[in-house]
Figure 1 (spheres, each protein chain N blue to C red):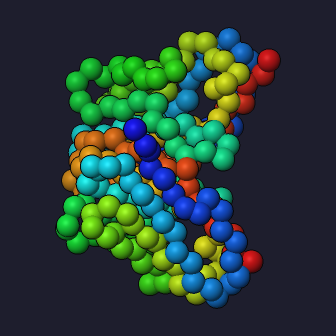
Figure 2: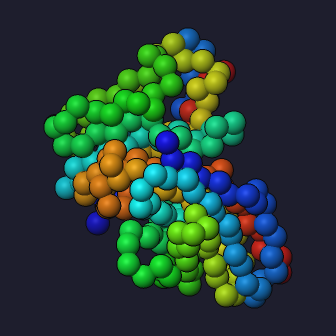
Length: 114
Length: 114
């Protein structure tokens, strides 16, 4: 079956612009995660959605970052007023449910802020 | 809070030689442990996982890992490395009591000499 897909695969934006990154999880997966992979910080958790519950936003680095998940499926990560330190690969993962189920990762979106 | 340490940033082995990648974790309860592999420009692929039971777990591509509670370790091994194993390897611990978001180690980049 289809895996996790993310779009765009690459995004170059100017400092100060807003960007939206999209994630399509595996069909039927109720849990969805966003992670960021950067040279300085490695792989770090950003936000977690489980079903219709309120998301766990504990990993978001600033209030410029937000995410939503519509209809329990597709998720969009939005970064407002992008800064150069936002340059990273943003990875999305999904799993059947949050606990003790392995996460399947998408190919990521490489964001470059110039 | 949980943490994961991968002491070796880079490892080079000859093709056909054995491999061991080290991983130490810190977590207050029984951990869920994972090894992922990332090839250049690719997302993360799960190699193997430990949830409970037998402390020696088998994964894909001939990899195995052993959970040692007394040493807080989950080292990855392969008896004979192939050139296609060259990639970056990440150890991760899942916070089962908090949606299983993953905390990753810094990664170990494996290079394979012909």
